[in-house]
Amino acid sequence: MNSRFFAYIAALSAAIIWGVNGTMVQYLVVTKAMDIEWLITLRLLIPGIILLLISCFSSKRKQIIDVWKNKKDALALMVFSIAMIAVQYTFFATIKASNAATATIIQYLAPVLIALYYAIVNLKRPSQKETIALILALTGTFLLATGGNINTIAISGTAIFWGLLSAAGLAFYAIQPVRLLKEYSANIVIGWAMLMGGILFSFVHAPWDVSGTWDLTTLSLFAFIVLIGGLLAFSFYLRSVKIIGGYITTLLTSVEPLTATIIAIVWLKVAFGIPELIGGVCVISTVFLLSKKGGD
Image (cartoon, rainbow, N blue to C red; front, top):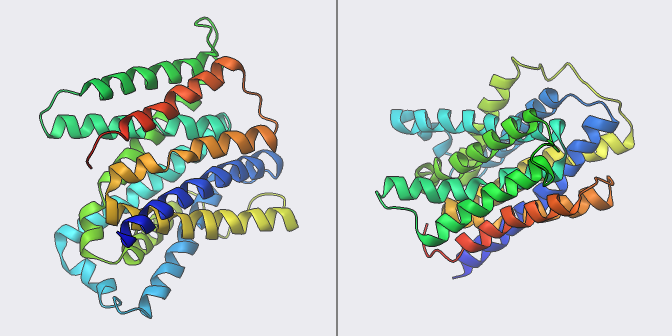
């Protein structure tokens, strides 16, 4: 019971951190001219190195090498590292093409995708709740994209494209590592995935090719994004996945879009009209609707 309670708190904490994190990313990209690709590279490399160093001094340090001895586990870890890149890049690209609040709301179509995935895998037709959730999700996405006017596009096609990929990536990210996390320490799984992802993404943007206008504000936000938003939040999230599964964890992190929206409106003065707000409520409500489903 205590471990499940910790998992719930960990998932909610990760969601709040990510909600703040997305707004900070938007600020650095728009105000400080920081390159998204460079930020992703460092956000993967630094936490990955730290987590593996921490694991070297833990009782599970033998698993650092053991995970590579089993071909099936090694392949799963490599796939997870690519998923780590995909989730980060598509989410940040959506922020760049729109704003943090919109990107986060669209990403939270993921629980609907997870519910549909389990319906297909289990050869079951979507339940009435899942069908209603799908309709709400599509309605919410439509309102966010058009502002309620079918002849007007409120956000760019680029933002919609990356946002939907981000949702798919988050759904995959919540399902794929469950077996690995049952076999190995969460720190080791996350550490290797981040380190490998960072190394791979270094070929897109080298870590030493620093971007942005740097001052104390930039340094502070960068440290938060990498250490708190990257290292701590991902650890919280995957520890929660390990205990209560990807489906319930993703549902619990539904406070992320709410957090991101409030901060974006208050801090960055992002304009959200009534149709966009209704659209956001539609998407977020799918999470609470699906949370009534009793399993992972």
